[in-house]
Amino acid sequence: MAKQKTAYFCNSCGCEEPKWFGRCPSCGEWGTCVEEVVSADGAIGRKPKSSGGVRWSHAGVLNLPGQKEKAHRLSEIEATEESRYDMHDAELNRVLGGGLVKGSMVLLGGDPGIGKSTLLLQTVLQLNDRKVLYCSGEESAYQLKLRANRLKPQDQQENALFVACETDLDTIFAHVAELQPDILIVDSIQTIATDDLESSAGSVGQIRECAARLLKFAKESGTPVILVGHITKEGSLAGPKVLEHIVDTVLQFEGDQHYMYRILRATKNRFGSTSELGIYEMLGTGLRQVSNPSELLLSGCQQGLSGVTIAAAIEGLRPFLIETQSLVSSSAYATPMRSTTGFDGRRLNMLLAVLEKKVGFKLGQKDVFLNIAGGLRVSDPAMDLAVISAVLSSNMDIAVDGRTCLTGEVGLSGEIRPVSRLEQRILEAEKLGFQRILIPDFSLKSIDHKKLNIEVCPVRRVEDAFRIVLK
Ligand code: TYD
Ligand code: MG
Image 1 (cartoon, helix red, strand yellow):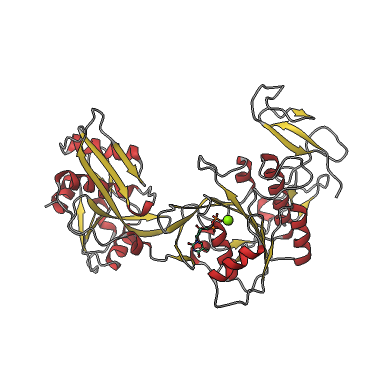
Image 2: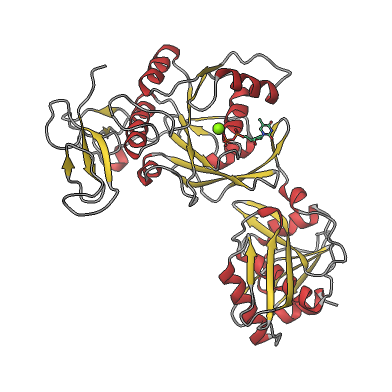
């Protein structure tokens, strides 16, 4: 393919230069230079990009520039359900919003070594009915084969999976044209490049151009494309922010190297909710889906220890019970330490202020540490009651009964506020064999607790809760 003309643009003011620049001669910003392909005739201005310049007709057909599509009345547009591929993985399907949508582009991000390649390879190995092309720019075919053997040793019927170790985008498209796959996977977007740009793979210009071309392919052919993306030191997806705008779905695969489980969450999803979570456990033979997360999050060895409480939380649509641990100790310094893992530090400060003002516990001279079990990050406000009880339990050195769990949001005046989907939380606690659950009094009316096999204690204020759990 003939080399295309490129020019350098400032990301900030849009000024065009024939040569690379460190500081934009027009607006004076540093480090905003991006190389881009310009129209074949060398005309000034950028070539229309798939992200902006290409239009879709209402039937999902691509309209080339110059071809006009008339505006339609919304009621005249026929909408059929998006067709989705079942990925044979309940966790992944749920996070995607019910399966992989045809013609969509998904970006899977995560720290190195977290298991992105493992997750994708393992998933596509199960898709015997779909032809998949896995393009890897990071691993050799031999390495991929070894990994596949490790993941699925018993079954060698992997005929539907094709592997190409390729970093050139045009060669990838040549493979695609030949194979006509149902799903295309590119691992990773930072390793592929097109010859049309001079900059090296992984640069902002390359990532943007490659992603835009892959998107055009996905929309035109209806083939879903899954991209793997790296994460920078700061924790955001490496590459231009525009990458996140281009794709339909952004999935984050996170977890701690030291914990064996991994969490998959959607941070953007055009075809589903972003509040869903998928939980996996990393084993020697790949990732195992964790369909009952509470099992994993409760250690069961907390009986009789002070500073430990169990919260009935909901993340996404799934309820689970999770251990909250706190340690309160005398501070050696004038400014006491407040340290949290998995919980919002400002929220903890607010809860400590409530303890001080409304219940009279002086924690001003104490260090307070708070830890949510398993390195999980929980943002459900219903955690409040468990957190505040754990802090007080540690402060008073009185253990909370391990068969009691708590759910409730704490208000600024120490009142326990109602929480969402209480019934689901209670049922989950009952299912796991808890004997008692503390819930906000205001929500009691909405549930029928007579039939339940668990004692339901409604509480109005934090003091009521302390009276029940700390004795
Ligand atoms: P990988 O999928 O290569 O990570 P990424 O693509 O996100 O960089 O995962 C590599 C890690 O996973 C590596 O540290 C080893 C571990 N692992 C297992 O524990 N069990 C397994 O079966 C596999 C394949 C990997
Ligand atoms: Mg990888």
